[in-house]
Length: 269
Image 1 (cartoon, helix red, strand yellow):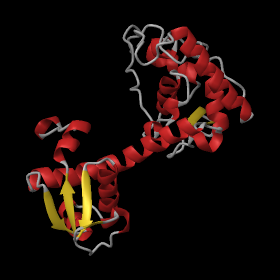
Image 2 (cartoon, one colour):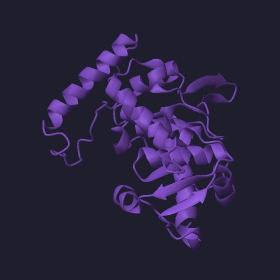
Image 3 (cartoon, rainbow, N blue to C red):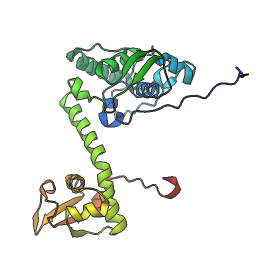
Image 4 (tube, helix red, strand yellow):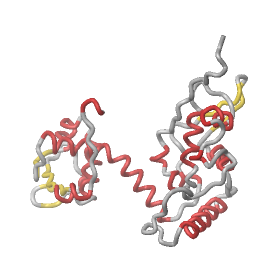
């Protein structure tokens, strides 16, 4: 017989891979992150039920990260965290009021209600297509699309936020490509000041295609970490043909000063 005093296995939390690249964490109240985790977990095979059911199963109905339960109030800062007065000298209350004013105006302009609770926000997830919920013979089933709709596709973002999200997506797109190119320059070539090469050669050396190498070079040049020259004249990295020879001139001092690299090797990988 089963021993009812022994609790069953707890379900592991999951997270949608597209959350960070989509930029929603820079638009929504801070409870958007744990709500997305909850819905992503509910979307895993083997679970049927409401988000309340899942919250009860994993956290016995109370999760501090989400503000308690689904009826917890939304905020743009965690009440328990120490306030950074250098980043926001106006203080927590003024910053919170300002964020709510902008958030409310953005949603109202797009024709959406302004959520006050996590449950309200989950309703917006359904309206926006960030999540889906359907009733099946086995019970309620949750799902999420492989690629999340972008905030700018649904809401009227201001210019500053649009540029910020575009920059984040560009960095997430180019980051792994730059890392692959830099690994070749550092590990294989020993940080040369300049090399004569081509996109084809770099692609073969980094196991990337020429278009990806072109993107990595464009990012390095835009960041001030490198120059691309043909002869004595500057060349446009975006317009290089795959076979064209060019000189890649590195500014390693600038690179090491402005970029943070994490290296994980061996059994720690």
